[in-house]
Structures are given as structure tokens and as C-alpha cells.
Image (cartoon, rainbow, N blue to C red):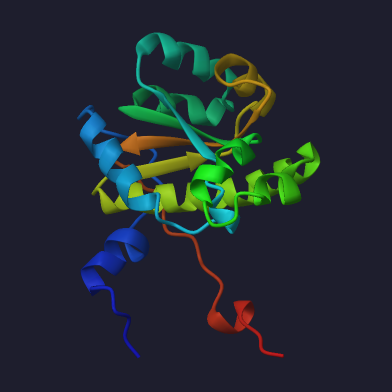
Length: 196
């Protein structure tokens, strides 16, 4: 059985897409970022909670504040990426639920009144949205370099607040020379899928 998505699009989004480790200096425009958001905002989340927040790091000053919080091996590629996005979970996402879930506005207080419940739900659903974001970057013809090797608390204090939990940092741009490591193996269908 074939997929409905064109094979070239399948390659762009998955088969040929790789984590980029070098980038050209071609800028990533505001229009490109808006187009990515306008596509990926339709990805599903529980209760349509949409807890992902994106902090764009574009200026030299902001980049210099970010680099010390990264693992040593992530600094050079982040320093050279045209755009860096800090993806975080908004633990106060429930404040938007009456607008995002107008047919069930009481979900805000019924399910998400307690902070620990919100934090767990925000982390899971923002991680889903982070995956959508990476696919959206690829759909824009750009390369993404997602990373979790950083001081999460340091990044939170430097760029966010107590209501946001950093999940990952994504370098974005056109791939530069020697951008890819060799493709690592993947698990086969039988290793992943089971029936009961």
C-alpha cells in the first residue's frame, strides 16, 4: 500500500531529512517562521491545549547569552545557525483553554486546576508540538538541529520564567558543508509494532 503523501514530500519530511550540524549564513526570515507556525498549529494536542511556546534567538547578544548554557558539543553549531528556537512548555496553558476549547470551557478548572497535572500534560503535549515544529521546518525546505544537551534550568532562568519548562533547542537554517553525520540505523516494523 502506498501513502497518500507524494514520495518527494515523504523524502523531504522523513527519509532524506537529517539533523543538521552546520549551516549556511542564509537568514531564516520572519515570513518563513510564520509559515511554519501557520502549518503546524493544526497538529493535535489533548483538549486542544497547545502548550508549546517558541522563543526565537536571533540577535548576537541573545546568542551569546544562550551559548554558555549549551553542552560543549552543541555550541559551535548553535553559534553558526541563522536562527535558534527555544521550545518550552507553558505550564499555565489552561488560561487559554476557554478560547481554544469553546465547546468545553469548564475543562480549564475541571481537569487542569492543579499545577502538577498541568506540568505533566504540558510536557507531553508540547513535546508533540515540538515534533510538529521540526516537521514544519523541514516542510519549509530548511534543516532543523534539535538538541536536549543544555542546562535546562539555566536556559529557563535566562530566557523564560517559572511558568515555562524548556524542552529542546532547535537550530534552523539551510544546511552547510558536511552538515550530516552518517544515517544511524532505525528499528524495523517487527521491533516496534505488536498486536494483542
